[in-house]
Amino acid sequence: MLEVNDLHVTVDGNEILKGLTLTINAGEVHAIMGPNGAGKSTLSAVIAGKDGYEVTQGSITFEGQDVLEMEIEERAQAGLLLGFQYPVEIPGVKNIYLLKSALNAQRAARGEGEMPAPEFMKLVKEKLQFMKMDASFLQRAVNEGFSGGEKKRNEILQMLVLQPKLAMLDEIDSGLDIDAMKVVADGVNSLRAEERAILLVTHYQRLLDYIVPDKVHVLVDGRIVKTGDAELAKALEANGYEGIEESAA
Ligand code: ADP
Ligand code: MG
Ligand code: MG
Figure 1 (cartoon, rainbow, N blue to C red):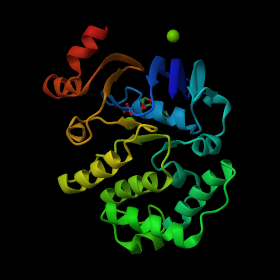
Figure 2: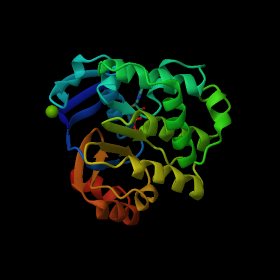
Figure 3: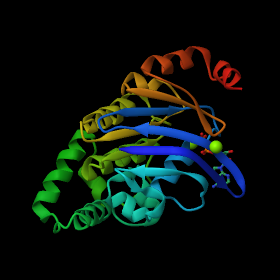
């Protein structure tokens, strides 16, 4: 589904990703772990097409298409979605409007008409319930006055409504208490499907007790230095990144 090959990315003239290679197949959940500043968020941002990142070498393909040739909206419409990608693009709008316009943009890209309002409301209410969110949430402006936990739930709600082919979630566990984290993890687990892949960026192992990844990659200084299964995340929790950084060097 996604192939990243020898990706080099600079931000403000500094090279952040230094030859990163990664393949994600449909049906898989991959976790990217690594120390602060390793380039984890940069990777998901570049795949999603955020501004400010310059690809100087390498390639990204998604279902055979050259991602680097696609605009940010085209990527989202092709089913490649970073959590909270939209609020960055169109701030200050109501949640319900955001969900509706994003969903209908996706449908339009597939040549489908708008989803009828009753069907849309039914879909959104079902997903809200799943995320244990109150319906009043829909009328609030995206992100305005949201607590950290509400933002994260809303991020997963967006994924549940839009059903992307590749869902990328960056640090969805940060700042969550254990109950909120379980709700968020349940939401992510409900996205698991044969035709979908999930890329989880996380600093801590704790989330991976609830969302068990098929593959874990350790990103250090702009490169993936180690790949394993869920056991690798547990080893990192026990030993930290230091041993890995030494063996990479
Ligand atoms: P991680 O998510 O692994 O903690 P990031 O991808 O956020 O790491 O950042 C990697 C490096 O790139 C850091 O040194 C960070 O300071 C730098 N960086 C990221 N984004 C920007 C930016 N917009 N402007 C300047 N430096 C940036
Ligand atoms: Mg290289
Ligand atoms: Mg980060």
